Length: 327
Image 1 (spheres, rainbow, N blue to C red):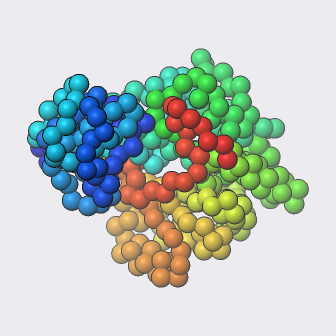
Image 2: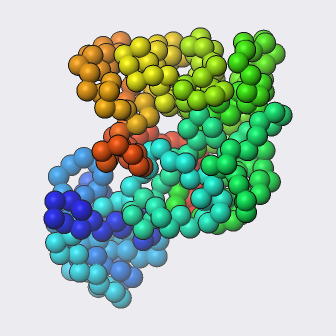
């Protein structure tokens, strides 16, 4: 709901649609449309004000946004409703859910059309001493992949409804190389972890994620995280993190890692503790003034649930039901 208005998520019903914003409004629809969504308040996701307009769809594309008359096979009356693109859930744990039932109905029916996976642990790599996380692989799902790229291919062969983006998890990489031991990695182990991150980035990972409160990622030092983040930065990825703690100390560590690795950073589900602390805005603004690209996302409800993006960057592999670009 927006105020007392119902949101009609256009892309939720048509996951492959390209939403043409007001700047790209076509002068005239190309022939008869299949569907015309008429009289709604269009919010195009660019941050601009809503506009009252009709949205015409033909096949899997939006062909017109505007007020001119359009002929269509089917007309949907959207008066009093908001028409918006699909939502991006910036922090999900849907690996098992999508592996079990690729339709993703629990999200798509709420208007979520892109899922971002892989906080700290990711669906790949799963090598050596790493074990399957029950949030990702549990009966009746059987893992037949060992890499993140293999997981992407599995989803596509199975068939999926939403778009999927995944980080490669720093904890997953460490578990694949060192298991779950609390010790300093050898030079060879560190080199292997960097190699696995590079491989995942080549397979389409969006960046490196970390959960510095979770085993085994919690055993990584700040300097080790800087080294690993530099690999993702070299491929144009970002660093996303569940901070080591919810205090200013954790925030400053996050900023330090991003600055030294020269990588944009997104802070997962920024909590009420640090976000309400006056130092939060001060430290973020200071970091930005020094050239650190730092953003955060937050729960849209009081204390738990899916995290929608306050800001998001997309540009690496996004698995769609129709195609799979290779990194």
